[in-house]
Each structure stands twice: as structure tokens, then as C-alpha cells.
Image (cartoon, rainbow over all chains, first blue to last red; front, side, top):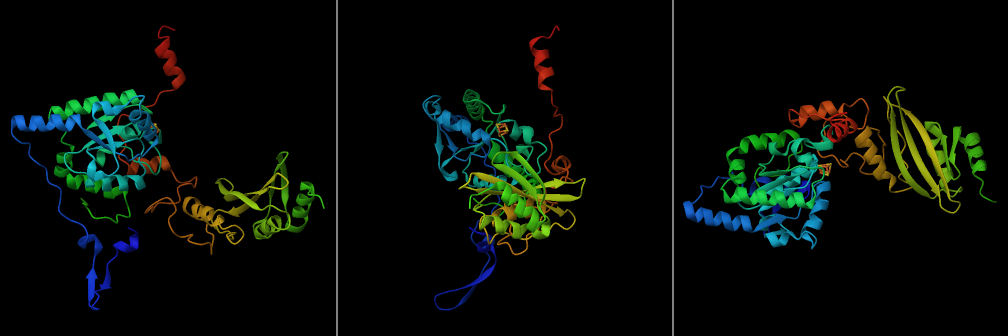
Length: 213
Length: 179
Ligand code: SF4
């Protein structure tokens, strides 16, 4: 959608009746996200086991680290044997790997994609750029700390981390999910206003709905 | 008539007030042209002198001298000759004539220079639209008096406790702790 498509305007029905539309409010759901309560004991444990063993990663590369995903998904390191696979759309994925530095422009797309993913969803932050800005820490256009904009489950350090490190990171993520600690989406819902305020502080031309799932 | 770069340089000096000719190596020359003559000189070079190709257009911020230096790098493919045209424009009145009618792609360079250095090119297509920054409201970020570190610290929630090591010293210490 281009910027003009989001502006308020009048359209005409086939009968010639004018209709006022405000795309940001009319086309998108404006409900806030809600946190979900875990189910009873063993059922939640089973669900967590299933979630952990089938991690679907959104194919979205942000920084240099995206390069490391190719060897990871191809036969040399073959992450598929651990139940990790890559998916083309946010609706189909449960893990968002932020693979490196994020410019403000990319962050905007990342937020939109993250919010379109279905619960429960997990964020793996790859490389020093996501932790403290890495070597772009003093850049005018890249963020320093990812955890101010999205809830991060696992950090993988390195610049850039090798595929082995990524595999270790995924193992760590699995442990967390199985232990019931993979509740990033809940954290996001509970601190929604704080996250939104941070996001809006740096994304100056905010031209998308506040929550666009 | 055979192509002679010295002949071209001579013409530029004579007709367009060129100065400070500098030969970096065979096939790569630079010359400075006054702002008023620059577009005329570039037009002359593109035709009849055969500099058909605009390689790049970029800028340097000479903060201390209060000037921007634009560099138009032109290429003559038939004679394997590159020629850089340097144009100095005052920093406080950063306006330059557009060359988009000679090369369409120049409009993209000019749009970038407008956004990153705040150099205006009146009449260039889409020059006022954002190029790669979205919703930028600070000063043009490539100007040298723009403090990126300060801006980043104020804007992007720096993580406290960040420190850096000198790699040589650090590795020496790691590998030979006793020395
Ligand atoms: S951590 Fe290093 S490899 Fe990763 S995005 Fe940053 S600079 Fe690139």
C-alpha cells in the first residue's frame, strides 16, 4: 500500500453514492493484543513441547547476519533435522530471527511483520547489533537495543555468529519454550504502551495502524 | 581528429575557466571548474568530446573551508578515459544546477545529495521526495557538523556499560598474559 492509499478520501459506490473512508481505521482491526493464560499443567507442557519441536522461522533478513541463515538451512548444517524450517509469510511462522542491524526503515517492516505473526511467537536476536548496536552503535539510522521495540527471547552474540552458534541458540530457545518461558507475545501485550511509545519515538512518519494483525 | 586528453583539458581551461588539473594516473584526470560554468562544461564534454557515461556524482563536505565539493565523474568509453569534474559550491547556499536532462540517472544522485548533504538541485525530478530515509527530521546526516554519535545516544536508547577494547592490546593480553 502506498501512502496515498492510507489517506482519508471519498469513494463512490456504483450507484453514485459517496462513501467516506478512512483506511487506517476502516481496513484494519484496532483491537489491542491480549495476553493469553497458559492452559492446565500437562496440556500446556504438551503444547510447549510441540511448539519447541516445530519452529517455523520467518524468512526475513535484516542485516548481514541473514547470510548465515543460508548455510543453516542447506545441507551442511541442515537445521531442518531439528524441526526448524523457514516460511515465506508472517502468518505461517512462529520465530522471528532478527539477523543483525536494524535501520529505522527496516524496523517499521519488522514491527508490522511481527504483529502479523500468530501467538505464541518468539524472537531470536542475532549478532551484537541487536544487543547494543554492534559496530553501528553510533549510526544515525540504526537502533541500538532491539529489546526496546520487541520482546526478545534469545540473544546470540557474535559479529556475525556462525551457524553452529545459531543452532545452539535455537536449542536454548527450545529449552525456554519447554520450560514455559517463551512468553514474549504476552510480554508484548502487557507492555504494549511502552513498546509503542518507543517505536513511535524513532519511527517519525508512522503511517500504519497501531496494531495490524 | 584523434582524441587527446591534453587537448580536452586545454579547452576546458580556456573556455570554461578550468584550473587545478591533476592526473591521478593514465586514463584518470581531475579538473576544477567554477560553479557557473560547470553544467556548460559537462554538456560540452558529453558531446562532442564523447564522455557519454556518467559514472557517479558525489559530494565532499569541506567544513573548514565552508564549501561543498561536487565531483562529477565522467567516462569516455571509446578512448578509455575518465575525467572527474570538481565543482566547489558555498556551504551556506548549497544550490547547484541539475544535469538530469543530460543523464536521467543523475536525478537519483541529486535526490540522494539533497537528502544526505542538503544540496538543492532545483528542477530535478522528484528531488524533494525522501530517498532512503523515512520521516527524517534532523539536519542532513552526511554534513560533517551533524554529530551522529550524539544523535544516536539521544535517540536510540544506548545500552549502558558498553566498552571497547583495542584489538592488538586485548589479544596480546589474552595470548601472552605474562608478558
Ligand atoms: S552484528 Fe556484525 S555481522 Fe551482525 S549485523 Fe551487526 S555488523 Fe553485521
